[in-house]
Length: 229
Image (cartoon, rainbow, N blue to C red; front, top):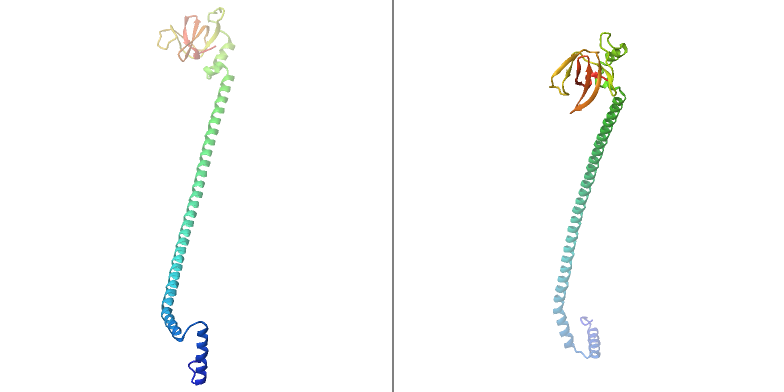
């Protein structure tokens, strides 16, 4: 209203302003000075506020960048964890397969040993049940048994048995009768297959079994497997 073109309105507005300033103990000069100071301070306040807003935007941008970087690191870490889990599962699968293979190999080996042991026991049982003469000379057992059933040769001298002695039948042709129980010992005589002899003694020299026999040619040593007894 102070700028009104009507003089009465402008004067009325001036008086109201003076009265209002008077209530606050101020003059028009004081009002002008305050208006001037306010005009000077306004740009500074606006600059300060703009700087504060710029600083906040910068901090917000930095925070957003940090957040994005953290999210990227988390994604990379998750990918590494997934890769490690897959590798662990594959390793567990490989270990399980290897253990199963070893268990099968041990089982097969155990079954093989068991089968071999059973076969060995069966062979031993069969050998234990077979007659001794068949173990010594299976091919000549029938000839020897035939000789025993036929009895002594009519032209053969009948030999008497002493206590602990028993008869035997020669199983091979030209059986050498040696002076001592040794393959290199001298030969006393040769006996024909089927000839009856008297077994006086049995001895074992090393891995070889020997028999001390008596026949019409005298006494001597022969191998245990060459005489049925």
